[in-house]
Amino acid sequence: MTTDSALERIANWQDIASAPRDGTRFLAVVDGDVALVFWGKTSHVPIYGFCRADQGPEDADLCDPTAWMPLPPPPSA
Image 1 (cartoon, rainbow, N blue to C red):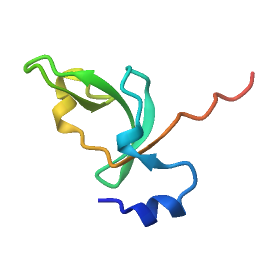
Image 2 (image 1 turned 120 degrees about the vertical axis):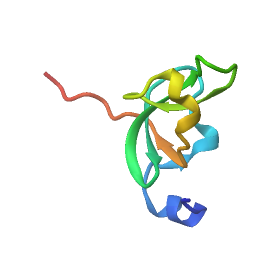
Image 3 (image 1 turned 90 degrees about the vertical axis):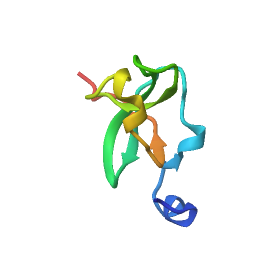
């Protein structure tokens, strides 16, 4: 698990407690890797949680991110 001091050393990473919970996609640290994540509702139980964008809301209870940051802007045309 990432410590507060480790988060402070990495620019722009924020504690997962402050992550958006409105379906906005963002980058997150999940099991030591960076993944595209969003907040969603599991389909099999009435629980909300974070899920990787490549898994979908039905797997929200399988994703436990520790830090997040907003997506960077897309490149200009």
